[in-house]
Image (cartoon, rainbow, N blue to C red; front, side, top):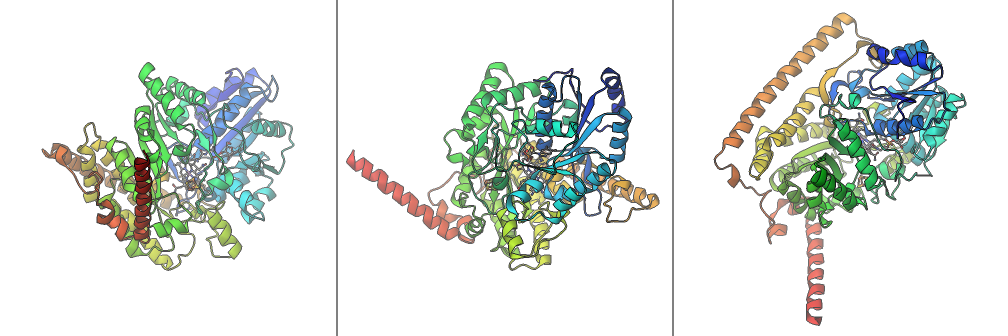
Amino acid sequence: MTSPRHVACLSGSLARRHEKRYGPMMGERPEQFDFVMIKPSHYDDDGYPIVWWRTILPSNSLAALNGLARDAAARQVLGPDVRFNLVPIDECNQHVVPARIIRDIRRRGSRALIGLVGVQSNQFHHALDLAREFRAAGLPVVIGGFHVSGCLSMLKEIPPEIQEALDMGCSLFAGEAEEGRLDSLFVDAWEDRLQPIYNYLKDLPSIAGVPYPWMPKESLERNSGRWSSFDLGRGCPFQCSFCTIINVQGRKSRFRTADDLEGIVRENLAQGIKAFFITDDNLARNRDWEAFFDRLIKLSEEEGLKANLTIQVDTLCHRIPNFIDKAKRAGVMRAFIGLENINPDNLLAANKRQNKITEYRHMIQQWHDKGIFTLAGYILGFPADTKESILRDIEIIKRELPVDILEFFFLTPLPGSEDHKRMHEAGEWMDPDLNKYDLHHRVSHHATMSDAEWEETYKAAWAAYFTWEHMETVTRRHARLEGGRPNKALQYLNEFRMLYENEGVHTLEGGIIRRKRRRSRRPTLKREPALLFYPKFALETARKLFSYWQGFRKERAVLRRVINDPARYDYSDLATRPLMDNELAALDLFHETAGGEEAVAKQRRQDALLEAVQAAHRTAA
Ligand code: B12
Ligand code: SF4
């Protein structure tokens, strides 16, 4: 697909250490087009962009755009004499200093396009701050991603921050860039006739057989697990009211093909990358999941090409015959599950009708018994929630569900969601600082909890789940399994705990060793004097390192205790015990939760109906 003669994909910034690679190209061809793709981070509470020495997960939005740009470059969409330089930068693992990028572009004499990629609502203000500097230097800037797409899809008028981008002379890209749309954008940029808005929201492209997400190894090495990522499908048939995805990527699902998947895996394995995050919001609703798993099984069993996969699924995935079995054989090691809540009344309020709490236990036990780690998202702040009910529910989950990690989120009216649209139209208060829309900050009021109480509850939830006692229990649940990986279970739990406690950011935004640049502070805050900033930062880093050291020591001690326990394989508890006939009657999950009794009654009615139909069939036969 890629012709190395016409495309150079430079991971990393245009900073000094890349100059060597840039230099010779200048001499070769006078016509150069730099496409600098920046996936921006956002500001922490102190006003510094969240940047790490190593991230934990890669950015798939960046990989998706880079894959498309690589293909456009190989097809020479700007003519045979134009050489492309592709520069994908994930700000989460690299400082972005516009002045340096501008200087490099000028020195090289290239024509350039700055793409701000996959910009989420929480990243929009920071993206504007970056764009301002590029625009002041006269460089064209295009902003794409969920904030632009979500707002243009759901709101009747252009919100002020998006208007600000337009006023600054930035172009906006709403919708997806496949099917030649990026080519057209390149041509417009090259010919200096960029439009203010490119809106493809009503025309969702097919993604079968199109260029797939791809990142060079040097970029992937900046995330700690050297993971790569890709999506196999877009769109979701469900209608959760807090979701933005259905309003941007649509409710009709679109899929890549098994051949695409094989291409992605082979190309990455060839560059030594074996771990993949499949970013589909719900792989279980991907019509072709079986063809994908079969292809991966074939590659693994016939050619020894083994992939290590992380996927996202819904709570009914175990109902699909063979789904979990084949997931295991295909190489799935971790599954993110959209559990969201264990109170049926809350799920109903969010229109999450597909989540049945009567299925949760059965589903998680099946993943667990295969040794696959489960990470479940749990949303705090539904209308029926109180501090007491949330803390009670967390204890029920700890006792009755063998889930490994619970990740907590504030219920957030994300721009692009039905919730946001409704609140916006009703004039309800939502925090005007988009930087906080990271699900780790409260940005609206709760129906019954005060602001302070809701915030306290969020902190208390993390503390209640990630106790050493519970982390040891989860580790024991894995240690009892033949071939179980208790070390990994404890490592993941402890990492989540330590990131939450030390870094002040959501764990999904976490990384290894925080970096800060004094001059990159949010322009609305005063720049700190060097004499204050550096000692403070050094002290903060030392404090964190000490806390990590303590955490790792404790982790080793707990692991040793669990592994050396002579009764290791006899361990059992309520969460891991096989399903029993009296389960619906016995568990607090069904009786203490809001709406739980009704869910059980409904399940019983359905079981009775099924039994009656089966009995009738038997009699007729
Ligand atoms: C994978 C993923 C992650 C991964 C990786 C990040 C990433 N963006 O790749 C991780 C786990 C790290 C993550 C974390 C978070 N995420 Co996230 N994530 C996703 C997910 C599931 C897939 C992203 C993806 O790859 N999509 C597929 C690509 C192809 O689509 P795309 O990004 O829209 O890009 C296309 C177009 O938009 C366009 N485009 C985009 N940018 C540009 C730029 C230019 C110049 C052009 C021409 C075109 C263009 O072209 C692309 C190709 O067609 C999305 C949901 C979704 N279905 O997209 C949520 C989503 C993007 N995440 C979201 C959120 C809120 C977060 C977190 C804040 C949550 C949290 N507290 O952890 C953090 C923030 C961390 C961070 N630094 O980004 C929200 C954003 C909503 C919003 N209004 O802002 C989403 C939409 C999910 C949701 N809950 O609604 N996330
Ligand atoms: S299941 Fe997930 S992707 Fe689908 S509508 Fe609900 S939140 Fe959105």
